[in-house]
Length: 218
Image (cartoon, rainbow, N blue to C red; front, side):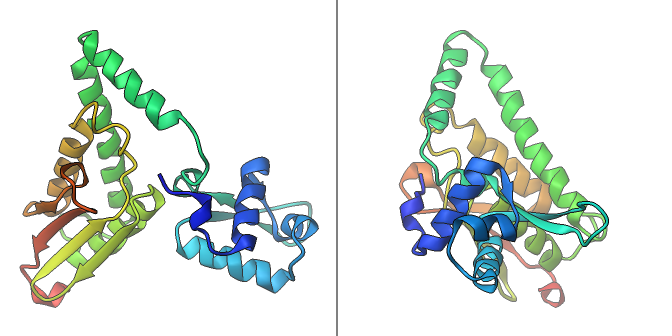
């Protein structure tokens, strides 16, 4: 579990805490609470957006210019302590003990199917004809939003996708179904893919590698 303590900037911590309390905020809202100049707060929010902590949308208010509203991403929500993951793991264990293993399998298959559709929706062309670079770019974006802290490396020979955080870390002791469904997700995207490291096996990250068959796509 990541923590707010990992944020080195006190301003960023206060911005996230404000969004946690209010749901979403504007720059004007932030200025009322945090004693920082407007450009400074905007710079922090832009950086937090690049880090996958903050999402934004425009909101029309009356006849004037629309306001930019900021809210936390699911990844940022993990920075706040909670018992949800532990309770979910206990719930999965309970379902397994009651003989509902297939229901758990259906859930995680649906989870990764939804992420696959999200990737497809963001591609500018069908998955079957999209280039490796485009798929990798969209995949990295989706994984970041989902809290996997991805690092992607691509050269002429291979693509390496490294997931530095596991949102299922409290669950894999109860079931390995999230990992099995994740492998199917990668196979649907790339067909030829190999998992070379795995957090539940003691590695520091989950790593997937695939060959780049056409170097011109890289």
